[in-house]
Image 1 (cartoon, rainbow, N blue to C red):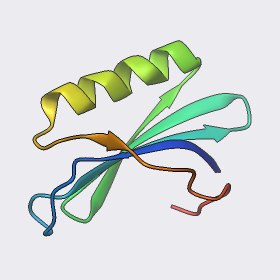
Image 2 (image 1 turned 90 degrees about the vertical axis):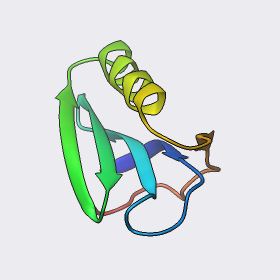
Image 3 (image 1 turned 45 degrees about the vertical axis):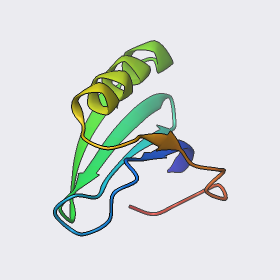
Length: 77
């Protein structure tokens, strides 16, 4: 699974830190929300659908969300 984009809420600590990943996997987009050491996934048929989920997660999450630099391609989750 290739990571296309990644966001972090700028907070530290297991109870506060959150990350959102936008992955691309053979014809599908996968949104991953990592919080409190656990991940939740959404499988999407389009980039538009995936980005709508990402926007909702960023709007609902606490902190100063920032997009992080390139994660270096493939990343196992």
